[in-house]
Amino acid sequence: MSASPYLLTTIRSLKDYLSKTSVINSDDISARMFILQATNKIENFLNRRVRFQTHTEFYDGDGSNILYLKNKPNASVSSLIVDLQRNFSTDDALDTDNYYVDADSGQIVIQNADILFQAGGALRNVSLVPGSINSLAVASAFPISLKTIKIVYSAGWNDFKIDTNVNDTIEWNNGTAQSATLTAATYTGISLASHIQTQMNAEITATDPYTITYNQLTGKFKLASSESVFILKLFNGSNPEKTVGYSIGFDPAINISALSSKEWGLWIPANGTATTSVTTIVPSSSTGQIMIFNGSTSPNNEDLKISFDGGTNYFNVAPFVKAIFWTRTLSIKIKTNANTAPYFLAYTNEDGSSGEFDSDIGIIGIPEEIEHACIRLSALYYEQSQKGNLQDLGKSSINFTQGGTISFNKKEEQQILDSISRFRRMTVNGR
Image (cartoon, rainbow, N blue to C red; front, side, top):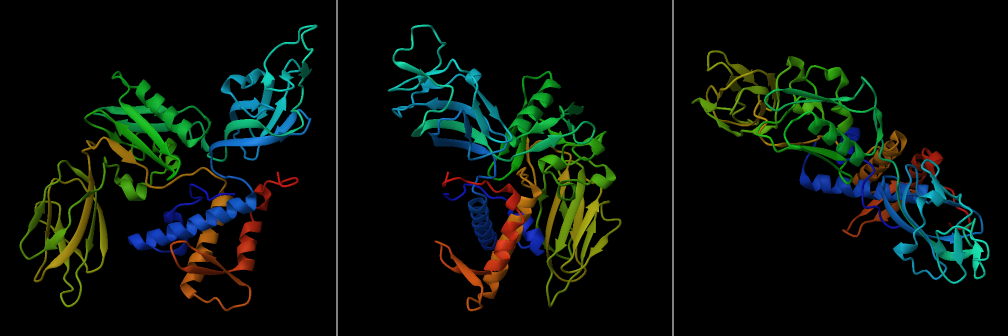
């Protein structure tokens, strides 16, 4: 099986598992390499693609009226052509009425005995007419032949389940409070994005101001608006207990001052160096959440002082400490007592004029066991690569084209793979 074009987990999930908070670019590149290697290892072991995507495949006919697709679940066939000459003209694609597809098992069943195929050509969608089949044979089955069946279909896991009164609500503000209810069903990422877009636009008199998309590679949703004001209220609207926010990858700990029910927008950075003179930062509108990190080091080890009421009261932020505040203010004042101190500050506000929001976490909609196996396998490669010991008995190695070798315990790798063996696609005679 060729290399996978996607990952079965996210860099953030791997780092959380390893308890790493580093966001150094080179570290992210390494993490991606480990996850990609684990993804390919898992898909080769399972003998299938895991995530939802489109496939074009060629099959042999065995004389039966049943064919099993290589990939599942959620199988949806867009084209099925049987052609003994292998020309595979789109004009010869079978009508969907002539076959049945079981989405979960990936089974295709020819179910219309009125399908005929010419001895030297393709299956035809014609009805039986007495005396008209001199050069034709009835095809109630896939004819015995090699690679004469071409199927274009989509399949794989990419499940997003919406339940009534659980995660069926999205709220936002475009100058006035807005809310849309989603229909309970199981969606793919793309179909859920389309449904959210439809439901949101249905609430607005303007012509379809909202565009919602899902990136199958990153697993992230993008919510965009052409309106002048667009503030998502995923966790602090009227019905936060029914929000779809978690299900589409938004994290309240990252994005929103949910505990105090503030409005929120994108994070806006405002870094600098504090001195004994007051530095004033003026947000474009009232803040919601404010984070500040004191980057002071020895020999200064200087406390930061930050005020939100015009300088009447100051809070101390010790060196190498990150502080989080939930407060509405139009003025942030920063200073020190004696020395300079670099600071890294960001805040959210009620602006909402950026026009779009990206989800924080990639949600890929695959079984938890498979994603967890990918995380564990990636962590195994990562941790063993740090040790660099290729001498121990039972070790194996993986070489990267970019250079370098990862050593790992083969037995532990197999144990991780065996934990997901129930998802493995069994083959017969290599098919």
